[in-house]
Image (tube, one colour):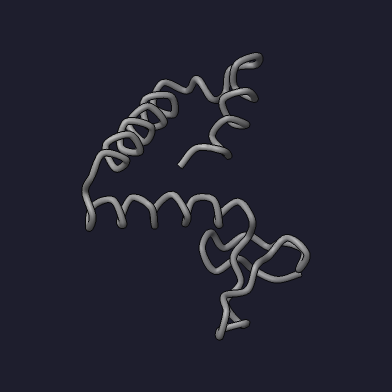
Length: 88
């Protein structure tokens, strides 16, 4: 068992990903998704364009869904969470 450097939760080593030249830094699989989304947002801020606008719309929709708690609904929640894994 090791601790995720991002969220601080203890996870089995098989559920953690090391960071390149810093194997002591390990991030859980859940946090890798969040870090990817934050990284894309930063890239979009630095290089605006047509695809950037589409990804920004997806992010705003995601924030709306989370803000209203739709991702926790019994039927639609799991579908939204699954969809989220495949969106930028």
